[in-house]
Image (cartoon, rainbow, N blue to C red; front, side, top):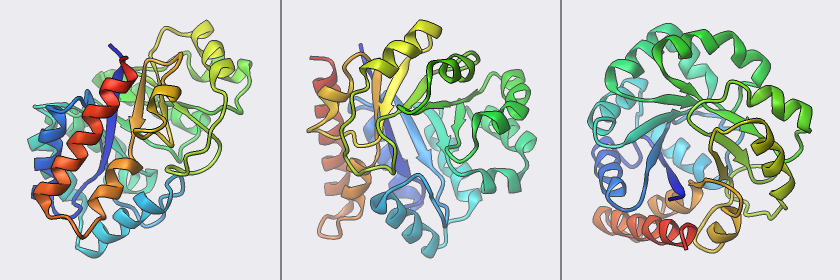
Length: 246
C-alpha cells in the first residue's frame, strides 16, 4: 500500500479547526500528517502555503499553539512537524525534541537546513528515536544521494522538481528514484506539485506522495465554511490515496 502524507498549516484559520481537520484526514486516507509551523519567510513554499503562513501569523499564531494542537493530534495519527529552522532553534533543539517525543510527534521536516548542517543534530534525533526527514532533489548526483540517504529514517522526501511547492512542474523522476533505491531501503515519497491530476504519475516508482498546496488552497477559500473545507480536503485525500494505489 503506497502511503499518503498530507500537509496542513497549524493554526489556520484557528487551532480548533486544525485539530478537527487533522482528525478527519486521519480517517480519509492520510497515513502521516505534516503540521506546518507558520513562518514569515517560507523559502521552499509557493504562494498558497505562504499565504496560509501569513494569515496564521496575522491571526496571532504562537509556537505554543503548535504544541497544544499536536497534543491532540499525535496520539491519533502519525505526526511530523514541518517548519523552518529558526523557530525550532529559538525554542532550543534539545528541548524541542524532548517535547516532540513526550507529545508523540515522530520527527521533523526542516527544508532550509542542508545535509551538512543537519548532521550535527543527528545524535539528538537518534537518541530520542525521532526522524529528521532527508531531502533529495532531482539535481543530486549518485555520490551525494548515497551520502545523504545513508542515515535516512522514516522516509526520504524526493522533491519533484527544482523550485517551490505548488507550481506543478513535471520532471522525469525515474533516474533519481533508481539511484536512491540502489543505496537505501528507506521508503521514498514524492512531494511538490502533487494533486488529484498528478498523483498517479508522480507515485510511479515511489512508495508514496506528499500533498500540501492542494489542501491548503481549500483552506484559503473564503467561500466555504469550516465544515465544507474539511469535507473538500477529505475528498481530495481519499481520491489521491485511491489514485496512487490503483
